[in-house]
Length: 124
Image 1 (cartoon, rainbow, N blue to C red):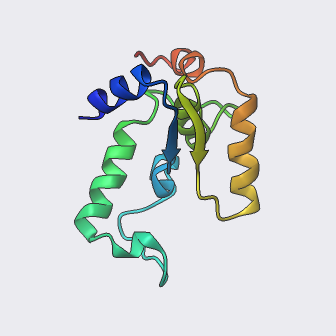
Image 2 (cartoon, rainbow, N blue to C red; image 1 turned 180 degrees about the vertical axis):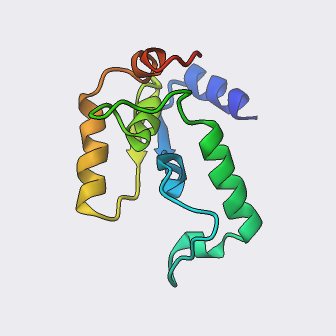
Image 3 (tube, helix red, strand yellow; image 1 turned 45 degrees about the vertical axis):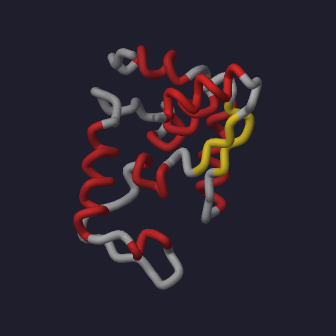
């Protein structure tokens, strides 16, 4: 379904907003299966099974080799992937700390996602 929506949006010259490109921090590898969340945190509404699925799915999307020290973080790679999509004009990330702001904004200075993915031994 998303492919159909993407094709129609492109034909109509519509831009996209990428919402939660780091998937509530799961793509950043920031969560454990036994983690609990405070009141008001959307992740507290996830069942144990939903949380486990998100963590395992995010782990399956990690680069085949660890990111080199000083290289891009998983969160930066996830954001870079979204920003490299030609029709994405806005990414709503939902950052909670100053460190997250600094980390994700520095993704703007990185090369493309595919350059980094190729350097890590990953493919398309």
